[in-house]
Length: 396
Image (cartoon, rainbow, N blue to C red):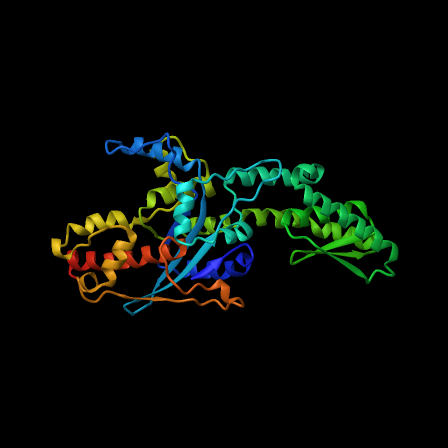
């Protein structure tokens, strides 16, 4: 499994895009900061509309912090699938002029701690995301130059001090820079600080131009004629780069929507509600509207928990599983009783085809309640179930 953070997201994304485009189906899983609010209680007598309204109240309070994706590709003319798993750490970034909030349910915190969730990786390396509304707000702010005109509202006090220090450093460097071939480098640790450093230096010093690198701004002295040419060529590059850094994982969501591949998940209702709210739009009040939206986003969704109830009807009591939790189903289909309930089940080969310079990106050990691994387990169970369905119903 490949772990994806804000440090390697841009590097891994092209590979992820190729893998998802080639996939026969895509399995997903998510981990949340909470799943219920004390004031909202489910009942066995809830109608589907009542249950949706209650879950909607729950989902609005929390967010997805880990998103798992596994691409399963059927190998032509072979009874085999190849799977490649990805585990994304997600953390919202504060939007300038809008103070976003993060709410934790203590029970969820304790649960994730039990399964050794890496909170440090989440805090330091979480990937940003935007839903459609927040993206529109930020895009408008960039077009109207709001961030640059309201620097003190766009960044922290520390970043504001850093920006002032950068200006002083460049001013001193210009006094001693000998010619137009010399350059000055500034380390800018955040995308918003890099953006504002570019804007501020270009605005204050007419005889310089700035260029971007890896968390770095390079300042060079240039003649006035060159500056005019560079300004014309620049266009909205800075704004687009900053917007892309905020969009982050939402780029993956949009790719999934565009591809329209079959989506597999276990107990998928909450996953889909969180996904709708976090990467698309606020949840609608009516269940029918939510269902229509999800069908437009993902026309084909298979829930392995629902399938487990359907499949049970085709098996004898001795052949069925004790528990239809994800771990219970994985255990069933990997032990003799489930593995050989019908013959000829496809081989599933978990692969990792990306060349990674960092061994830390690759996580070899499987464990439940890590979204990447759970997405793989959901896809694994789906293949086993589908083979049993096909054999029992159609004899093939």
